[in-house]
Length: 291
Image (tube, rainbow, N blue to C red; front, top):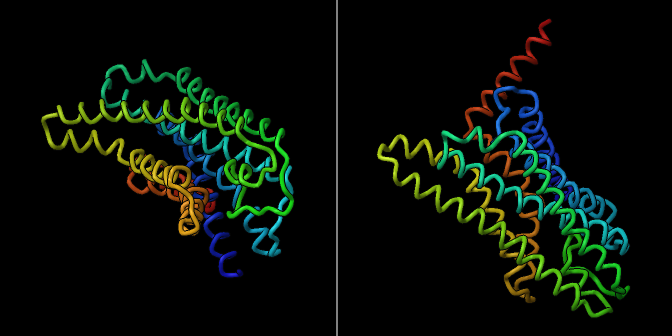
């Protein structure tokens, strides 16, 4: 248990440090004050929050060897987990739309993606996600739960609470299905269609250098999208059975703890602007220390 505690503690601390660094760089460096990095700062803040919903409780359980959680605490965790997961889904769609405008309509990019539009899009993402989660949380209050039941995971989620409910969760599952289709399918279609037009535009570029440059502006986002959707599909759409419980737990850990760490690394390692901003920040600290 001590080995697992140290391992997950290091992952959590690295997640906080890397995302906080990106968030601070975007806020403080004028060269990063554009729509793409505005959404990236939102993603960094979201990943810090997303990881903080599950990791501290898991680390506490590993230290105390506790295996229990109260129903109110479980429902609270569900509210924040669902809202932040939904926020990431919608934010990735907003970021794909930003890349679509940047590549397909570069001459009108600054006009279309104004700060007013960006702030409205980000606000809509957060309001829609928390409203979606609030509906499910309020519906959970109508359920009664069996005290002897256990959740086969390291944090609480909607399907887990439905499994231990002594009340028929039919209404909850119907609402979850309807809202999931509206929000999930809408976000997926926006992301999918954005990249259809992006790839079509890139294929029309004659020079190889132009194609490579255009494609490089969206590879990081596309990688994050594939990882996020891949984890989501395996967790919620692969039929759960006794043989798949271990794999399901593994992908849940990847989605809740590893993805928030990978996202800033994927965006920063191949991003010259972020690396340049990091170097400027480093030299600025050295000047402060020297003085």
